[in-house]
Length: 87
View (cartoon, rainbow, N blue to C red):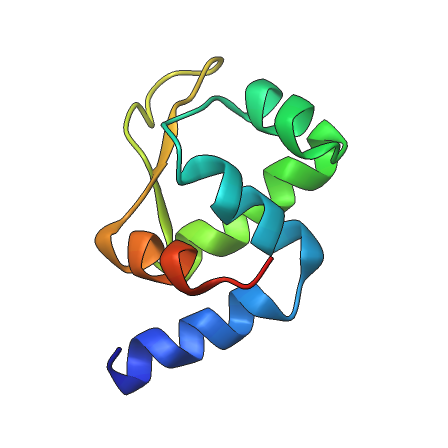
């Protein structure tokens, strides 16, 4: 991992919500409702977590123009981070 990816990894790793979201997205792309159900995190918190991860370049929204049912997936950096997250 390069230094920039390591910084993002540390950012994800210090938050249990961010870790759960990244691990859940490692399987497949998901909408926030599915992510909330998988992780046990309330939907309003998932939205905040996704926004933070998107700003850091860890996740991306593939249908940004949709008002509902936005699909999120990990970026390449996000996949690298997901592989390193401890359980």
